[in-house]
Length: 68
Length: 419
Image (cartoon, rainbow over all chains, first blue to last red; front, side, top):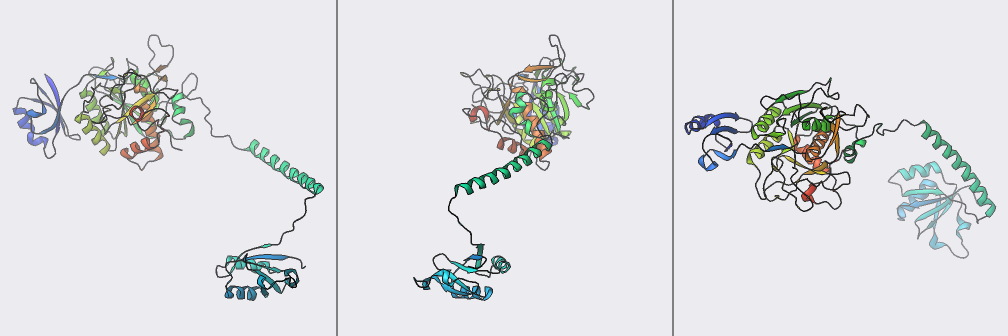
């Protein structure tokens, strides 16, 4: 499973697209209202072009390190 | 000649002005144009007769009413703008000079004695009574009285060893975003070190000062595992938590390397922007991927986002640290904002194998970042009316450029206290 973070476009509201997103087969993990960011999982390799509601789509990174 | 002769400077030489003088001081004024070999000024000047020196714009008369002169000078309607008594000039006399010198020396002696008494009795100067780590001196900590009192600083890192003597008895709030690992333990040590630089005070063994915002409120978010590794999720969750809690400063001594010309993450750009809108300043390490001088690497994520302050590291010789990343992706964002001490930095550390005391010296842009976080807290105490974005601007505007170091490497320069 891949974890993604999508930044919603202006004028797109999470409550209105939540069902559509789920229908595409993704599993919504969290929504951050302050940031208007949706965190979800999918088995597919996805890009921002696969959605028309996101300004950007980034896959979870696991390479943040303490810098010393 | 009468007792006192006066030199009176006039604003102008209009007829009305001369008449005013004549009226105010009951004198008759003769113009210097009327003087001749047979009619010399000293034959004219007395208490009732004055001479106007046309070229100089001054009137000379004897025994003038000094009180009236003072009133006239103060009165803007009067033509008189200045006056003084005529002075006596004498030829230089060696004995007289020596006598005057002796008098002068006596007066000087009494002044020296007065100064000596003042110095001996003056209050203790406000010099720091403790030694400071080099990094603290470099940012001007010896010249500030601010301690970050009441400002919440949130350290997102490997946690905190709350059993460390420097933190015992302190009320510290925290939360772990790493499954199965507690925020109040720090098996790694990195988080405890960073927390000490930003919020610590003095060593419990030597008394030397190592921390900046000693009276700030320390908040801990554990976003890096005990092995020092973290994910986007842990960091985003922790920032969301910190903003909800209204912590004013988030310090992140963590980084993910990026490639040349790789654009910044829009995700972190959005988060940093929203943090600023919520009055929260996020400060992050520029990263340690460089191997200078030959191979500087670009500023890492998330510091490469323009809404997150990127911090480079310098050493005590004011050289850029060998490992410190640079703003070489500046065209797409990702420049350095400021630099701070990041080489041979002493701070708190958990007692572990091989560590014989509670402190350790570490190097990294990780160590530079909490210097900026701590100083931001001092600024917030000093300027309580400023918001996070304004504090950012203040940090940059008061940073000092370092000779021979480039903007690409240190941004606006070495952060400084304001006093």
